[in-house]
Amino acid sequence: MEYKKTALIIEGGGQRGVFSFGITDTFITRNFDPFDIYIGVSNGVAVLCWYLIRETDNNLEKMLYAAKGEYLSYKNIFTGKDILQFHQMYEDGQKMFKPNMEKIKNNLAGKDYIAVVTDAIEANAEYYRFGPGDWMPKMIASGTLPLLVRTPSLINGRRKFDGGISDPLPVEKAYRMGAKKIIVIRTYEKKFRRKLKLENYIGALLLRKYPNLRKALLEHDKTYNRALDFINNPPHDCEILQLSPPGKLKSKRDSKNIEILKADYNIGKKVAEEFLNGLEDSSQKS
Image (tube, rainbow, N blue to C red):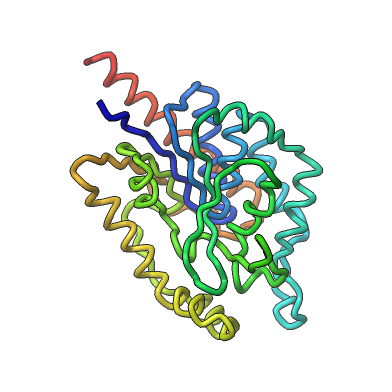
């Protein structure tokens, strides 16, 4: 009999990732990890990192640390510097929180932990597996937004950008890898459909030397919504569950309001508790 794999996918969303942390922290405390495949996009790669380390201490503080820091300055739009000092934020965070990558290696044991990255020239999705070598550049590349981060993210000498541009909800990738049950942690409510935003047009304007990437930014709504269509109408042999906020989160991608971030973290914990309690109830009835 073919072994049916289970996948966990975590969507990006910047500071909205506090919601995702609330879910994964609850998974850790409830010893819930039936997964064979873990795929993160942008901030979702970092959330998975701490989930696989099995550390719940200070996970909310990790997001609040980014909010408290002076890493974001929209004034730099006129200076040519990073609007979001993304590389510096990760470097400082690594020094402060000291992620133990050896624990990830031990906890994976035959499983796959993947970061989604977008190639600047081809604008296609690339899927980097956790393994030997420095993982931090892949994590950083997966969250490098074209407009906000001007310091290049390089992998093997090629420039990379946020994985959410090319594959924001990599459910089809998980399915191709053999996952027949997929849990997607969303940072938007279930009814959300992507529309192009002003930043897509500005980003496309500034990235004229990358024509394929420019096109991908201008078609991002179609890319995102196509993934939603797959989630809502999966193949007959695949079950997809979404863990989404019950309504629109108050946190924004660049939120610095500590109380709002804490509240959305607690919403994530509540969603996870309800999900896990439902699983327990179902198992007791069967």
